[in-house]
Image 1 (tube, one colour):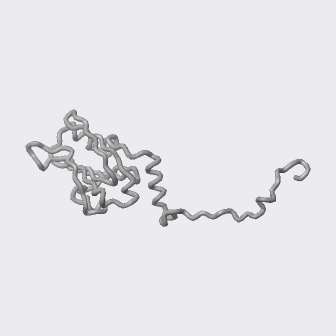
Image 2 (cartoon, rainbow, N blue to C red):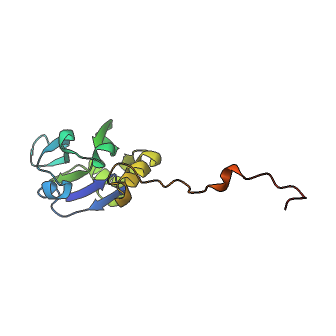
Image 3 (spheres, rainbow, N blue to C red):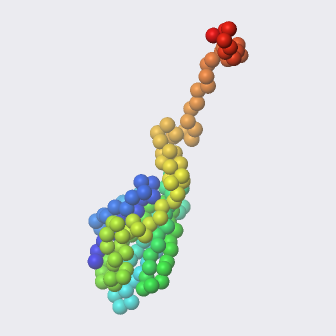
Length: 158
């Protein structure tokens, strides 16, 4: 089995990619990477399931404000990883069936991923908007000068 997926919390997607482990720097946009080994073969160290993600210090907004939780079960033992930013999930070698079933398809990986709340992701996406580049969106106040002279409408002054 050789599969890899790009997990993107900004777009809230899981995408199958080619050579994800080897291309992690390119896919994640940084050369400062951390690796969490989710599983490794006891007799074959080249058989493993790894989660490659950017070092937190290397992340800029909006990626530093997004993330996901990965739930993974290894031989009946549940494990949970919290990740900030994008990540690449890569599996290679002779992976046992119970683990392969969790990472064999995009659908199975999506089932193991829980992105940050919708509200958090929406705020991050809004912050990416081109009008927000200066940190504040410009606001224009009303130029209405007759607001002090307005009176409530009555039957006689309609």
